[in-house]
Amino acid sequence: MTDRIIDLSLTASRVSLRNGLFHIERPDLPDADIPFEEISMVMAGNRQLTVTVGAMAALMENGAAMVVCDGRGMPCGLMVPIAGHHLTAARHRAQAAAGEPLRKRQWQALVKAKILAQAGTLESLRGTDRGLRTLATKVSSGDRENMEGTAAQRYWKYLFEDDPNFARDRDRPGRNALLNYGYAVLRSAAARAVCAAGLHPAFGLHHHNRYDPFALADDLMEPLRPIIDRAVVELTRPPLAARPLDPEVKQALARSLFSQVFLDGEKRSVFDVLGRMAASLAQVFEGTRSLLLVPDPPPKARGIEQ
Image 1: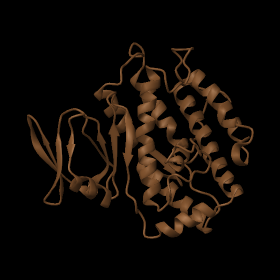
Image 2 (image 1 turned 45 degrees about the vertical axis):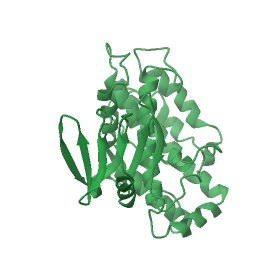
Image 3 (image 1 turned 135 degrees about the vertical axis):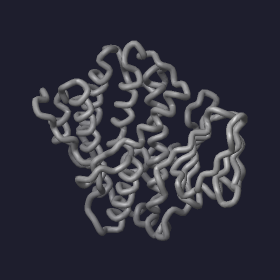
């Protein structure tokens, strides 16, 4: 499978299964046929889009995810394969039996990787990490001291330097709306990776909202959030700070998932990184490794102010 995102937000398309291919019919455009094995995600954003059950089933059988958007164009639903791995049942049991100390160690690794990624983002954009690298060294098992929250306060304060009043708030418009959309796409990719690894998406390491069916996806995506943050910074540089969440912006945010991330010293796509993270976590639950894989710390640039 390749990391290909199919965006069906612009026109009232009809999608079906034809001759074993993902067949798209669009008004005033030629029909398109795409092999299912090339598709990683489908963004179903147009209110007049029609998708046959045959096409949806073939997407699931090939390990793809489908994201459904609401009237505002924001992701509101996610379809992922039920059985993504031949050891799914056994891995679900091992995941459910995992003790709290084990889960806390994995969360510690994820939080540390997230703060280091935020530090690298600030360094490259603002010339200083504002002390985030030091905070990362203080993350304890389960992040008891909430270094994640402390880092977030500094991070958001300096990420959008043209708006000193910016605050991360899911219910606010503007840049927050762009962040919401980008995170939703990233979350969908994480959920796809979790299911493909034979893990249950509702059994999280740290996130545990009773109404959250994708808590584990929320955990795994944390170190990769700065990829979306950087994309929003680039898309809303003044004088575009109030840029709306239009189709062009949505496509740019989705494309940010093709960014290259270092994992185990090698550059990999976000989809590949999430897949390897989820697979390594499954091995942790099975007892064959002690810690899940997380993205490598960004290298400290020479001359960067701390």
